[in-house]
Image (cartoon, rainbow, N blue to C red; front, side, top):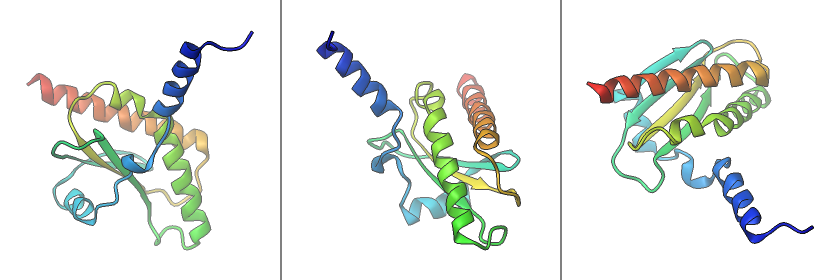
Length: 142
């Protein structure tokens, strides 16, 4: 039995929600500089989230990832960690997107010196995003 249009539409929306498209990526040099100067940080070793509240944007959260060249000399290793970070964020971002109306810019830093596995990064990403969510909820309740 072929799927109905409702099922196709539901599947398309679900897949779109799980994407990490071009509009969600943080690329503005001005905003990245602002993040380092004015942003607040949350750490769960080996990840650090630097975030900053921004003015109204088309996407509520823009994010970027970075890995230190000092700790990983090989570009291949740095790029692998960045891919793992982006994938982990993509899978777990719904927790933050669905629970906030404000606009933010995120920068995820990898602070470790060892090559991580995806499972390790995924677990730490969940912890960082939960910590962020708790901080924002605490701030809004005051």
